[in-house]
Image (cartoon, rainbow, N blue to C red):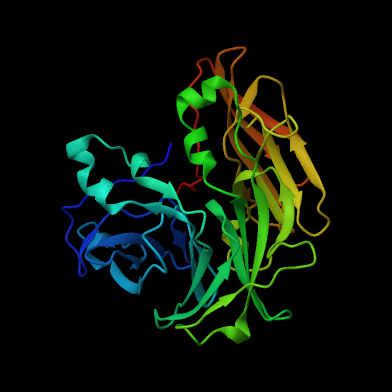
Length: 351
């Protein structure tokens, strides 16, 4: 289930580079930012920038892509699936799910998979690397209690509290990686439940890249704020609220308490009130909900939520359209065949 492409033959300005990670960021002008791995004696992450799409059909945008920052891991090379971006900063989270470089190099000889090369280092804390977007320089590092994260949600600078706020779906460890194998899903043992976590990095402690600060624990013993429990594949109004304070979060959840075999709910969470709305129908498995903003929106959640739903009882797939405000069903378009489960999705406007 982990989609990582290794292309050791790729050329780069620094070592050999893999394909980019799964979730890039896109600025309002169309510029795309992503992270790749540079292999060498000391493996590093390379944050790169791809310019907006050109109307010239002869131009290849990847030819103009340029590295804007090189990040040295605090420990060994860690697995990375997504990262955070604010108006002025990139935040790259180094979790203790590590790569064995030796196993990566031997995988074609011995028959290792990429997952065989991953290991959880229980003694390693998670590290937040803060990068200045204007210079590409790392200007701060923060340690937190160890956690694993596939998906970041949103990040922004909160001037009132003088923090960089980072919301993500966090786990206590990386057990989910093995749980997503097909034979484990068929066993019915269920998936680990994620927390919607909010981490706060103090702005006044930036400027000392050689010092790693420790995030303080709160009265509950945690170094993050728990916003919601049991939500994955998060989405929000990215077009208008990326890098800004936001209120509404959408994602997939499970109908049972504790652990469930797979996602069977669409959830909307009001992060201010902690209230939630749920779409659920027995025997149906919705994909990641995609928020589409109304043409002339009246509020953050003015729009629709789209999801591809697998109906295992009737052997069909449907496009479900929900009103994003009240979560009432607006329309369903049914295809008379059960497709493969669509993990992620994206809505593109036609021209």
